[in-house]
Amino acid sequence: MSDQPSRVAVSEDAAALLRQLTAQHGPLMFHQSGGCCDGSSPMCYPIGMFITGASDVRLGALEVPGLDPIEVYMSESQFEYWKYTHLTIDVVEGRGAGFSVEGPTGNRFLIRSRMLDDAELEYFGLAPQP
Image 1 (cartoon, rainbow, N blue to C red):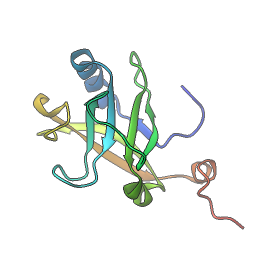
Image 2 (image 1 turned 45 degrees about the vertical axis):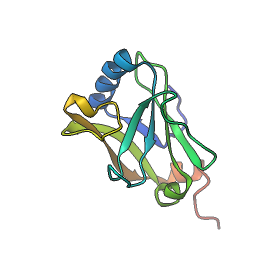
Image 3 (image 1 turned 45 degrees about the horizontal axis):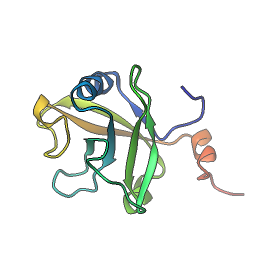
Image 4 (image 1 turned 135 degrees about the vertical axis):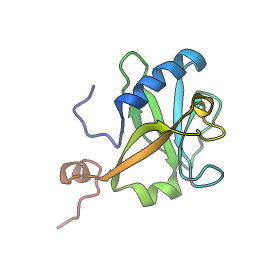
């Protein structure tokens, strides 16, 4: 694990589900949905099932013990709204998003957010300039 600030994290419950889903589907990745069919949900896909493009921003990678890092992306236009926040992928009971791999499990991933602190703002080049 790195001591550098990260824009993304994962809860223990979500990490446990990711270990199960990785065993079933292989390596995974996330793309933060922009509000279409499933609202604004973190969508989890097997690597290669969702192709990122030039207009997607890599937010970072989730560090889940026992797994390779799980990359997290969102569209550049949506990132403009979220760039001052830290996102934690969590899981709750409920119907998962239609195209996300947790759909059949009776759980769904969701985003919990907080504002970046001063040190994180400075690290990401977002601190106000004097």
